[in-house]
Amino acid sequence: MSDSTSAESPDDTPDETVEHALRVGLNDFELSDEDRALLDSDGTPGDEATPGGGRPVVAIIGRPNVGKSTLVNRVLGRREAVVEDVPGVTRDRVAYDAEWSGHNFTLVDTGGWEVDASGIHLRVAEQAEVAIELADVVLFVVDAKVGATDTDEAVVKLLRRSKKPVVLVANKVDDQKTELEAASLWSLGLGQPWPISALHGRGTGDALDAMLEVLPEKSAISAYERGGPRRIALVGRPNVGKSSLLNKLAGEDRVVVDNVAGTTRDPVDELIELGGKTWRFVDTAGIRRRVHLTRGADFYASLRTQAAIEKAEVAVVLIDAEDNIAEQDVRVVQQVLDAGRALVLAFNKWDLLDEERRHYLEREIERDLAQVAWAPRANISATTGRHVDRLVPGLEVALASWDQRVPTGRLNSFLGEVVAGHPHPVRGGKQPRILFATQASTRPPRFVVFASGFIEAGYRRFLERRIREEFGFEGTPIELSVRVREKRRR
Image (cartoon, rainbow, N blue to C red; front, side):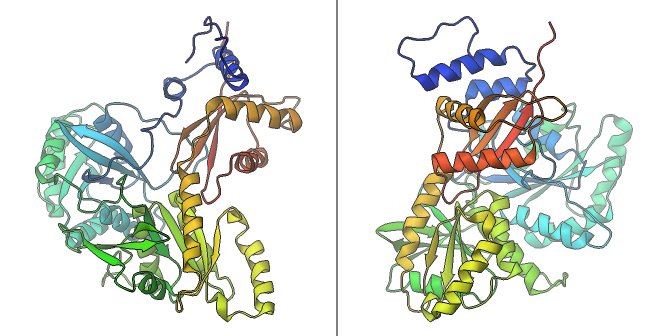
């Protein structure tokens, strides 16, 4: 952070002057190490949640409270800051650049599974399958003190079927006695359990060495790569015309099939020329149906959609314009938002609509898709190919917004104007002040606001809306979190 005694440069712009003054003012408040790290980095490039392309991907999976995040921090060698301050909104998978013994890889931290009495196996399957699908190697973390549970056993079945390399990690082994208990995990049938203490570092080196033995040099999945043609997921509920659109886009010998070898399922991406550019449509075949689960086609469609979205940078959600907008359409859109991907809406069979249907469709869009009023739209016909080229401007603007970074000085000057015109309501005789704001990352754009008191949800939404109006952000979700900080005690 800027030193409080440093002088302003005569060449500073008004925005930079505002930023400098607010940074100095932050010195009067209690800041954590994570706060200072964020302010020092100022959201500079390299912080995106989609680390370097080609790197092998290692997913850490396991039940809640087995120590997954502690292990992530141990491998990274630092306590990774969490931007969100609202429970329940953290994404299920967060990717980090990691290194061990000179080997670089992408480490994916998965959220703990919300297990309930009625849906344990389905919820475990949903979380585990997507994490496994996108990984080259899996670190499966089990609590050695508790031993293997029914939930662990359910995950083991998925791991065996996936044929992905698995390193079994027995965590919370702090002494010799627990090490003997960890040996019982041989019974899971995944090979040697590696006893570790993620908290204290005991044994983690041996477990990571075992991981390196099965880690490929390059990822066979490429779910988290950067660079190359921009990656598009074509998603939507069943029978909305996804296959017809993909076939139309790939017709006339315009498609190059890129076989990504090295996995049991050999996923296929398609390079498609559209609007004078090459785009990579990610493999949407996704996860094959599992015989041992019986929730039916909707469950597997949801899994395939989630896997495709995770591999992409932007999702085109295809909606059948002839039908009423269904709950399933809204659910697919929500999956895109939860994954933090850019979004374009494509309304198929537009050429078959009469004026009355178009009128009612607009009303449905306003009612059911109000939360994504910022998403670009294209009205197309997948069968005839009419207006499919109109997808291109939407894709370009959505990806540009997804990558956009707002200068810190400009952001703070703008928020100052907004707050001056529409201050936060006074509650209990107090009015929270916005102390400083910065964009923590892109892909999607994430903003962190430091405040002197609690900022109400309605006012947060107001700030998000004003940021979107001022800086564009068409076609991308944006996230705004607030860190409440108190004044230093003199």
